[in-house]
Image (cartoon, rainbow, N blue to C red; front, side, top):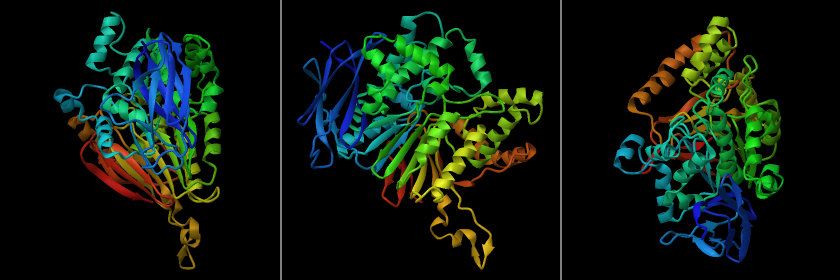
Length: 544
């Protein structure tokens, strides 16, 4: 009899339907029942693993107490979800975005004392336990990078790898190992229940593939010479497509996807591998980014890893096609514009200057010898955020400032950048520019509605969910990011003759280095962000 291997995961949800993703132990019919609604799909097989995405209509009226309609999952007619002793998993239409939670960087190690001492409490697991008891439900959960650590597997995962092969690295290499990695990440009962109950959207970062993925052309050249790398990148992108990307898509987008059509036709994985090869070699062939309108809010999830242009002198964190797509996607009348990027756009100002300086050096600002040294420094210090792709940073900064100031219509109440990666959490807020005085008033004061609108842009960073820096690395980050980098970064930027960034910002809250999840509460006019550990609030700020 077929069993659930992973899931169910509640993925894309809109006003009318919800997508349930599952992995099963063998081919079968997967049925989802929610109230009077019933939908069924046959599994498709990829490299010996079996998956289904079932779109079920959200019943109307959907709920009376705000929690939604309970649903159940059947495999070949046998009920496999919900599990005994767990609260029901529910579905409700997503008509407005009032509350979302997000975080990044979660290692999947056991929860006993030795691992709690080294990795801290799993905040995602703790959050699931809290929701089980409270009954509250956020509208959306965003997992914004490093859902799995393919390059830093847990001891149990290393044992699994060693039992399969004697050669190669102590890292995940092929699709089978990725499948086990995801199973371990998403099978803990409270996490499993949480992901079955709260709609979840995802985006990758480097550890989903490998640390420093696509930092530079030199990094790609070095990895191309590693014997197992081709199998790793093909398997990593293929696994991301199946385990994360497909659930981000609407039913219509999936229906138009030729790769999924081939898999459902019995391809077995060849089409997926060919797709992954092309996505790595020709990033412009695939768009991992996506946009969702939820009530009066718009969410744009940006791929800031796979789509990079790494040519020295013409580096871009997103290519021209995605840049045009982004410009089109931000246009519109919304109350809140949210942009998810696994990498922070607004770093501590000193670090921003250091990364911009390093790009200039790598591109020859100080000569060829310094350029070679700069490339090594870029990889060694992970100088690869938006600031290290200055053209892309300036384009995004000007675009968002234009949106926030009303240059493209009614400005949103807030422009919120959601990010992680850096293993500490903070809030950075763009400073309103002070215009010249005329007739006793500054120009920004004369502009009425546009006054101070640049202050509506905020960078919210939440990292990690479970992978804290050691005390030594925390101290090193505080010194490097918030002490040394400030004056040093300004001096280096001046020495490289770099112009100042088109916007200015300041750290308004944080940094915090504990494991955490961030909650963003939205009203038509305001946003409030709160960072919480497993048992305490770190900080809360009302925006703008």
